[in-house]
Length: 122
Image (tube, rainbow, N blue to C red; front, side):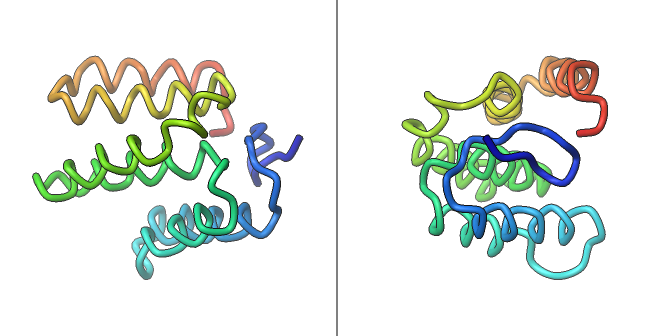
């Protein structure tokens, strides 16, 4: 089992994928650079990395444009197999992205709040 920088368990087999994932999160959180390219790099390095699919989908949803919502849905579809083996946290993040994609923003906010209750360092 691997853990991300916040101590959350992640499903992956290639630590290089985790490095790319962390770069993507940093880019998103600091508005510095392209956050999507590092998530794509993480997925390319380990296509079983469920958290990378879920987080990439959520970041795409945060851009709030139809083309990005469609890309988020495609990301979750591409990660279906990985998400089937995901941790509960990774599945919850993917579920929240699905709620956003479906236009259920209040439900998505509650789902993300639940993730934070269960994983306060997330």
